[in-house]
Length: 480
Image (tube, rainbow, N blue to C red; front, side, top):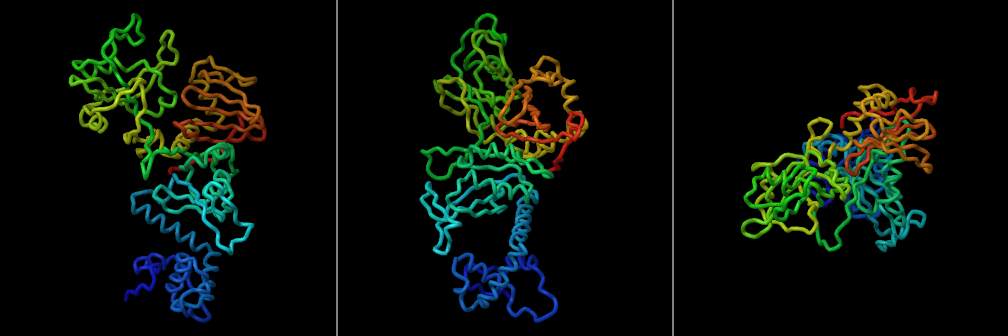
């Protein structure tokens, strides 16, 4: 028979049916339990929800001493943590997600401390003007709890996050974390230079920082930049010897989409990050009615450098012209749009989803699903052998002609850019395809694969003979 709820914090029958099997089994032998366990759980929830003292439990609950006895022993056995983990997995599966998350969200909140909170565990948050404690919370992207750490309110976000991220790192598979601007600075360097023997590298934890527009009021979704807007003027002849072999550039209403593309796909001053970030380009021109509108949409395959006399760093777009039926075409082409003095601007767009580049078939907002770039790198190293064999193979498939530092003459293949960092004690080689290699003075190897603004790092150690032939992988990444 369903029980009547006495207080808003009481469990419903459906909630109790989920929680009851997750509680520890009663001890066998001795006197049987006097009070129903559901009443014990409801009493604990009442204290947690209202914040009252244990001695102030209403009389219709079991005695406060009994409730507190159960609470202490269940917490010592980590019953709450285990219960949250099981319920989180069930909710994720019901939402069509994997049981374990691959990405998380971290944030902090300062709260006033009660009179009973001692000086040794409280502090003053000057920014929020709060004297009390600060709680750091990591959730998955559904908002389900992963980790909680409570500290004095005086602890800076970037400092308190270290303990929180280490806790998350050791008890969950999450290796990618979204954060706000409060977690910027030295914390990012710390995640990229901290690792624990026997565990995957902590440098897999990254942060995506979105700075809030101070003029914005209320909630506004933040999109990742994924689209270029090219503002075209009227048709003009191109100078002799045009690098793209064009006779004219600009827009006229009678031009076909392919003529517009060939005449205006380059050359522009496009940022280096756009080469891996932007997926689409839209072109706008003045229509016959005298209004500026989008007249062409292109899916970008790649952005290539173009040698233009007197204009270094110019680039051109290579891609395919989109047609009706494609969501970007339908959303933009034929629609009015504001022009810009700069011929190239970057748009905030929802059309930045793509298939993961590791060919797993999953959809991501970046080149890889978080963590899959690490797995793909490890899979390719495993196909060749160990890290040293992978480097040897990599050296051979590229042409010669790069820089070298000291004794690393075999690393010149592929034209890497070589730099020396005495502070961290390593030589660094950056190849044009985004692969980075660190050779540390103490014998460690670090292989780095860059995907947009995210840096994914794998750390390997030299063997005892201290040579590249003895290098070995210390961590393997499994399917997320």
